[in-house]
Amino acid sequence: MGALLSIVVPVYGIERYLGRCIESIINQTYEELEIILVDDGSTDLCSELCDLYAEKDKRIRVIHKDNGGLVSARKAGLSIARGDYVGYVDGDDWVEPNFFQSLYTAMTETHADVVATGFSRDFFSKRLCISNAIDAGVYEGDALRDMFSKIMSFGTFFRYGLTSYVWNKLFKREELLPKQNAVDERITVGEDAAVVYPLVLESKRVCVIDNYEYRYRQRSSSMLKSKEDFKRAATRLRLLYMHLKSTTKNLPVEYETERQIAELMLGMYIVRAGGKLDSSDPKLSAFPFSEDIRGRRIIAYGAGTFGQQFMKRIAEDNACEIAAWVDDDYWEYRRYCMDVDPVDRISARDFDNVLILNLNPNFVEEARARIAACGVSEDKILTVTVTNETCRLALDEYLKVGAHGEEARLE
Image (tube, rainbow, N blue to C red):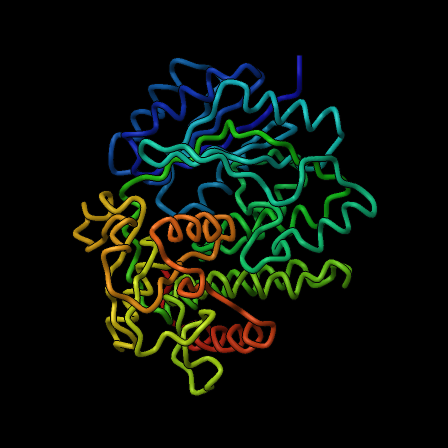
C-alpha cells in the first residue's frame, strides 16, 4: 500500500465537464486517494454532482463554500487534506488512468520534493502535447541551482523553464501548505505561478518527467478574452509581481530571480496590453515588434489573448491598417462574431507585414512555417522583440500603471 495522495479539485460553474473530471480521478490505477471537491459557490448543478459522487465513493470529501475564487478554493481544499502528497486537477480537465501512479512513482523513487511533468492541451478536435523546456531528469546540487536560474525564463523571452501550473505537478503537503496559504486571494492572474515558483525554488531535489496524461481542456467559453481596463489588469498583475518579489527576495543571487520575474511579468503585461503601453518615453511609444509597424498595412496572425488585445488597441489609435486577421482556429472565433479568417487567406491579400501575435517561442516557429507556406518571405514576418533595456523600461512603466490603480476595488 502506498502513501495517501490528496487530490484537490476546485469546482465552479462547470457542470458540463465535472462528471468526466471526477470519473477520471476515481478510476486512477493508484487507488490510495483522497479526493477533495471544493464547491466554490456554484449556482449550477455542480453542488449536487459533488454530493452525488461523495455518496458513491468513500474517498471523496466535499466542501461547500461561498464563492471566493480559485486561490480561496485551493486553500480550502488543502486545509483539510490528510495525504502525504497533494495534487490538483481543475474541474473542467481530466487525467488518464495512470497519471497519479506515474507522479507518485517518480516522487518516491527519486525522493524528490516536487515532481513536474508536461500536459496535453485539448482544443476541440486537436491534441497538443506540451513539455517543459527543462529536460526530464532528477535535479539536485549544482544541476538544480543551474535549473533555478532558468525556471521562469528559459533563455528565450516568455518561455518558461518549468510550466507555472500546479495541476501537472505533485507536491509534499507539508511544503505546499505554507506556500499556498501565503498567496493573496486577490491574485487572479498567475495564481499558479504564485505557488509553484516560490516552492520549487526552495526545493532540494526536483524531478521532471515526460508525461502528457493530464488533459487540459481549452473551452470555447474561455476563447473570448476580457476587455478589462488596462489599469485594472495592470493592478492585478502588480499583485503577482509584488508577491513573487517578496517570496524570493532571500534566495541566492545566482538564481537571477529578479531578472526572471521581470521577464515573466513583462511578457504577461505585453499580452494584456495588446503589445502597447501609452508612454511619454519614445522607446516605449511603438509596439514591441522587430520593426516599427506604424502606418503599415498589416495581417494579424493569432486571435488569442494577445491578438484580441492588439486589435482593441489598433481600433483605439489607428496606428496601422489591418488587411486581415487570421488564425488556425478561425471558425471557433467566428462563433463569437470575431472577424477572423483562415491562415491561407494571407496569400490573397495585399499587405506590408504579417505580425505573429503570440509570445510562445514554439508557437512562433510553427507560425513562421505556416506563414512561409503561404508564400510570404521571411523579411515580411514580424515577431515581438524585447531588449534588456526595453524590458527594464517597460516593466517600470507597467508597474507604475498598476500602482496607480491599486486603490481600485478588485473583485
